Structure formats: C-alpha cells, structure tokens
Length: 421
Ligand code: ATP
Ligand code: MG
Image (cartoon, rainbow, N blue to C red; front, side, top):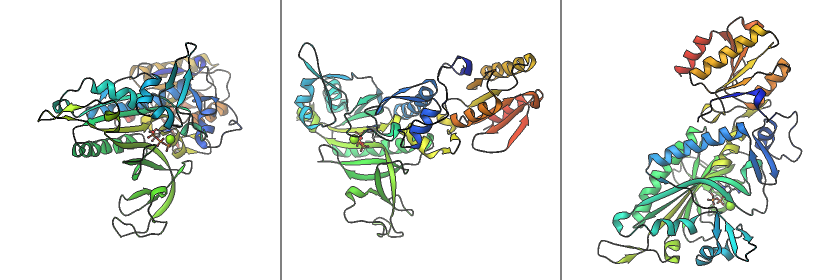
C-alpha cells in the first residue's frame, strides 16, 4: 500500500453516534458507524477510505496465497454479452443473473460468476494436455439479484469475490489441485484471523457434482453446520443425510456432533466438463484424441470475509481489528493540541512513524474533546492507540485496543516493541 498515513482533519468520513436504524447485524452497525462503509441501497455499499484499506488488505492476503500456488491473476469483464450465457443455458437458469437492456436492443448480463468468460478465454489458448493444468483468478465485483440482501456486507447484491477457475486433463489432477487450494484457503482465513471449517455439500444451480464450503462459526451466518470437536468433520445440515445434533461423529466416532450457525466465506465447485463441453473447447491428449478438461471454480467472499471478521472481533465499544487486516496499525491521538508545543510534538511523532513505515491514522483535530477521540478510536478499532498529551510529558501513552491497561513509554521503545513482534 502506498499511502501509509492519514490525518483525521483531511478525512471526510466521520463516525456516527448511533448505528443506522435498519442495521440487523454487528458488521452493518459498526462498519457504518465507524465510517468504513456507506449503504447506497439494500445490498449495495460504498467503501470509504478506512473500509477500502481493510478490503485491500484482505484482498492482498488472498492474492499472495493464490500467487504462491501458481495461479494467474487476470481481470475479466463484468459486462457480458447475452450469447455466452445462452450457450451454457445460464441466461434462463441462473435466477440471480442481472440482465440489462441496451438502447440498441441488445441484451447483456452482469457477471455473477465468470465461467462463461473464462472458459473461452483460457481454452482458446490451450491446445494439448501439456498446456494443462492451468488456473486463472481475479478479485473483482460480482452482481447478484439476491432476493434478500441482508446482514450488512455478508449478503450483498454487489460484492467483492476472488474467483479462480482451473482446468485439468483428468479428475485425479483436479483432486490434487483441490488439496493444494484447500491448504491455501485455510492459510488465507488464518491470516485474517478466521478459523474455517470445510464442509462437503451438494453443488449449486447445477447440482451434478460435489462442492466444498469453507465455513466460519458466527451467529450472523445463514448456514447451519454440524461439526465434530475431536476431528475435522463438518457438514451443512441441508445435506447431512440423517445426521443430527448429538449424532456420533461418522468420521472419528469419538464425539457427538455439535450444531452451530456459520457463514460461508469460500466455496469450491467441481464443475466437471459442463462448461468446456458447452463451448466445445477441448484439448488433445497424449494420443491425439480430443478431450474436454475438468474445471474447478474456487471462490472466496472477500467483502463477506470483512464482515465476518467484524462479527468475530468486536466489543460494546466497537471493532477490534486483527493487525493483518486493520486499516492502520496505530491510531495516534493528539490531545490538548491548541497548545503549540504539544501540536509540534504530536506532529513529530506522526512524522517519526511515517519514516519507519508504520501505518498511522493521526487524530489531529483541535476542537474534539478527549472523550470523543477515545470513543472514536475504540469504535474504529485500530490495534494500537497512542496518545500524546500534557500528561505524557514527551513520551507516549500506548494502549492496545484488545486490552484495557495503558503504559507510558518512549517513542523509541514503542517502535522497537513493534519491530520485535
Ligand atoms: P451463498 O450460499 O452464501 O449464497 P454461494 O454458494 O452462492 O453462496 P458462490 O457462488 O460459491 O457462493 O460464491 C463464492 C463466495 O462468494 C461465497 O462462498 C461467499 O463467501 C461469497 N458470496 C456469495 N454470494 C454473496 C453475496 N450475495 N454477498 C456477499 N458475498 C457472497
Ligand atoms: Mg448464493
């Protein structure tokens, strides 16, 4: 990220005293109140400077892990011609597809998933089995005509998704790739402070093949899952095949299954050759025979993950961001800034942080009261609150958002403590 600094006085997004009336979940309340997002209409949000920074951090974690396993990043079109959706039958079958009429009487669709775009894109460049496997991904907005947009940014009509599509010469190769991606996903969620359980579930709109869901336990979630504490067994109650709360775990037999609400932060579909066949785009195998590749679709709900993080990390005062996804590492609060000497001191601390590459939000407001500044810092939830005031006498009062005790230390001590983490 290029811009590591931000002054409160130049920020237009302010905090609100009260959450929006219609907010039904903690993430909707806190993200709006703290000035991270702004709801334009049900299920559609703008991301303000703080929210955009967090969204970008989540995005970058996902990007790093996808790049690490050798997937190719692309950016595909969101406005699709009708014909590609007719080829696969999706124009009539996909109920969430937004359709657009043009003044030229042509029709278009807004991308709700990109199989129709990626299949010709990749397969027109693949000739033989030697070109496979290959995986392409993007981090981009999706549009879905969801019947009920709710739970803040957990279910939107426009939302940010990482979608990766892989192409394999056979099923075995897909299975191998799935294991690699599964490990990468677990890492991604851990890095953003989430623990994901993996379920086996039935497929989506075209339920011929199986899918795997990545679930994070939260009461704000829309899914009910059964899981075992003694092993990694987990299943969606929708497909549990007779299993219930209290049933013996079918995998380890050591424990009874528990039931909980969860939010799906990722999803993997084994698409088989449905799309490559529909477009009649194959490859030649080692004997020169034409075959259709097996395709996989691997999604991560990037904006939904941001909402889930807020659902997990908060208290009655506001958000408590994990460091990896916090908009800034340090919230510098300058108090008594009408005093020229203190203002100079606070500015110097701000400059020193910047020089060290420490991401800092500087509350440099002169007219705001201490209580107001502290309440804002708690609401916004940046990991370290650092106060410069009359009381700190040239030092810093440092408090972690997740702890209640503060301590007075020198700027050098503080910077060293950050570096040695
Ligand atoms: P859900 O069952 O929640 O509707 P889905 O099965 O339709 O999800 P996919 O099409 O596989 O989801 O999309 C991949 C990921 O994108 C999901 O795992 C989820 O994290 C996220 N996602 C899906 N729909 C939405 C939405 N309406 N708003 C925000 N994120 C979403
Ligand atoms: Mg859906």
